[in-house]
Image (cartoon, rainbow, N blue to C red):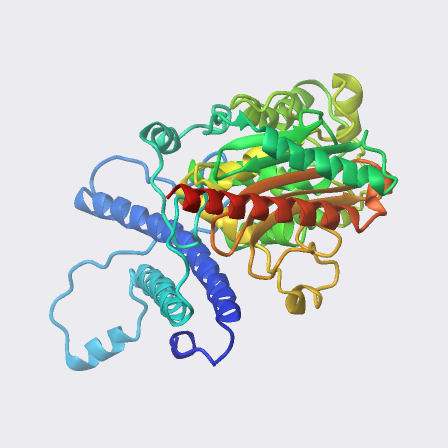
Length: 482
């Protein structure tokens, strides 16, 4: 804590990055501790009720987590001691060494207080560091979230979030927003397509969606064409997982948190497979028949309906990504192939750049699931653009992708997808002064794009440059009119 409040002299940017990371970890710890504290309080309440009417012929209440794939560990039920007569000092000292029945709750409360204190200290220190820096321009209205902000959701959205649903009833809580087409934005996209053609790349496997978050406008190229999204699909699985956590269908636990981090930050297929099993309540394995197969298939396809009910028409995300080393699977086998053959399912997941861009926009507007859940997702998606940092990370998601050419002080978050036949990314980009903010999704579904590490950086650089020029021009026009 002393190091947090008195950081070593370093650049403001590096210190802010470290504090944001600690803040995100503290937020996740708070969520876990609150869940465990609630469980303990529920157990203590049940024990108090039973002790108040010991002769009642009521079977003991079992503490369980319904509709979960894996149960979270629950602390053993503490025993309440009956009133004892006055004891000697020696017996009191001896009893003091015994474990108190509410000590687990006290320990959790202590840890929760520490985590909250850590969060408050991190926010305070970030504000102090920002005050030491050069004062930024006056803030303007933005559709994005700062990591420590808690935006208020519209009443209709908030009500949808608060209404708990079963796993069969659960659907995405955000309906499509109204975005207007923009000729100026379209010219930027057209330039990106021409750039790909100038590098001898076919534009048939290319899809682009560009959303200006300041003007609420959209443009694109083949942006409604379904394509295999590679690891971009993990962004959709993340949202479903957060929705199930919000509704109590899943319970937070360290293994789940670790897998979410590995799936989004490192794009780990093994972690993604475990998350996928949890959110679908299915597992990979040998072929099935009869009712067992029907139930398995229903659970698999349910995650498609989760998004389709909110206007994500034609989306298909019910297939795992391979290879999965922990299952010794280089590709689909058993019931995975059975689903494809018998139900004529797509060979792979299918998503459009419009759908990927829309989901990223909803996360950064704070509407996806809830404001707090959106912030947890933001923490996992945010990337450090400082070359001194990302170049030290083998297999990073910056080199060869949209973040590579951008200034280090740009606020950037993304999910990439790459195979031997694809190079995809959906990203949120915001300039340092906050005047430019947009979502850019680029899918290159061909080996020529996979093998070309320059095309996505080139497109990103062209889009960023033109978006900044448009903003500067608008400032000049406003100044002249004023």
